[in-house]
Image (cartoon, rainbow, N blue to C red; front, side, top):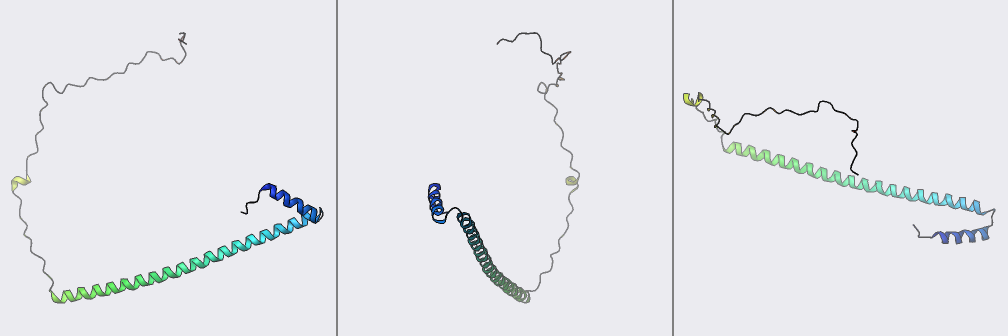
Length: 149
């Protein structure tokens, strides 16, 4: 925070020891610790208060924007509703057209199923059954062979 080296702290401590003496130095160190703790708490409180005020202001702005959007939405809905009602008055509603159902020809309904092709000779060979060769006896014990090392 303040860029004070350890050697500088030692010099400050020695000067304080000489000026205050060995009896009053611990009391003054405690008092200095209390003051620094109070200052830190004060700074944290100020930061917290500033953050809450900023959030309050942001929320107020967001509420204002939300209100403007709601008003704009209502304006669009009212305008669209009046436009649709004026269009409905100008043009009468169309009647649904009569669709005629046409019958499909019998050939389309009962079409024959496609025929399967016969396999070409020589191309499709019957598959051979695969057999796995397994030794008669499996052993996990090393054999007496010597390794080539």
